[in-house]
Image (cartoon, rainbow, N blue to C red; front, side, top):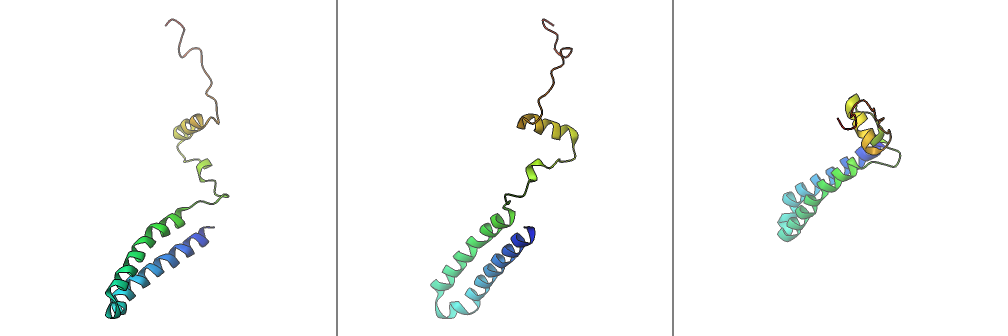
Amino acid sequence: MYARRRRVYFLLMGGCLFLFVSAWSFVRLWSVPAAVAMCVVAMLIPPVAAMTANRRGPDDRWWDDPSGDAKSDEWWDELDGKRQRREDPREDPPGG
């Protein structure tokens, strides 16, 4: 999965560079509006490439991976409802 996303990212960024360089190298000699249009298209490609490279597939379970910090993992598990926190009656005595 990672290799496919990386390949698509580099293809998109390579296309972006090709559009930008070709627009101002030789397309501007025939048509400046076409060169500007090519640059506008090239400007829109990097955000799409970044979204493509960072997209997670259905098999990627990155949100379930422990971070390594036990306290943080416990806190997130509690927020997600995975582990119910045991209430210790000694922590908050009634009427105390």
